[in-house]
Amino acid sequence: IGRIRQFMSVRVDSPELLRAQVAALSRMIPLLYFILVANACVLTVTFYGKAPNWLNLYVALALSAVCAVRLVQWWRRRGIVFTDEQAAHELKRTNWLAGILGVVFSTWLIALFPYGGTYAKAHVGTFMAVAMLSSMLCLIHLRSAALIVAITVCIPGTIFFVTTGIPAFYGAAINILLVACAAVIVILIQYRDFTRMIEALKQTECMRCFQATALSGCEA
Image 1 (cartoon, rainbow, N blue to C red):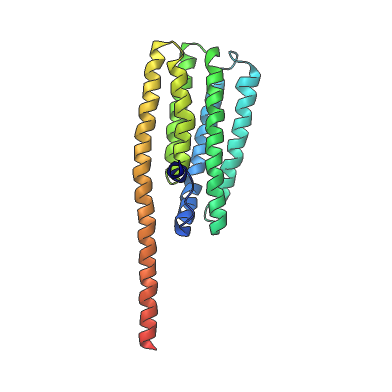
Image 2: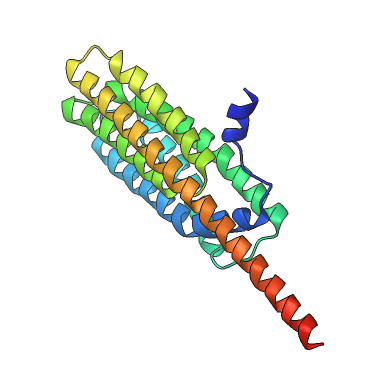
């Protein structure tokens, strides 16, 4: 359990990695929130007049407002140099929000599902798959957050579609599961390479400093 918890948490033992993750996420997370808001708006149009306004419109507006606020916050942080503590705090908050938004969006989609016709229900499945995949890829530099999205969206989505009793959605459940598994593999590989690159840059910088110090000593 300890190893799993460590695997799903933010690494704080490497200041260089923390700063590199925040810098990368400041470019990707605004795109993530834009995708979520855009998809939520389109889905709201699909279910307009079918689902209750409080569920279709008001919940969508609330979710879009939260996403818009976070989009602006991350957009303003581009180019800002964080301290180690600030970077760690922001990444941990991103983990928590990934889990919360994953659960809330999944619950909203499942609640909307019964009110739609055949095409509207298919739109719910499309939204879930697109939102999950795009979110995971935008969070590729923060492995823990990407995996949290996969868990909070893929698992409830797969279980729900299997239990609908509609054969066509059995395939949708399998597709979501396969997409999530493929995305997880890609993220694990890319995150490993990213951390190795940061470590290599750190070692190169240390070597340069050592050489500069040695050269200064020789000149003296």
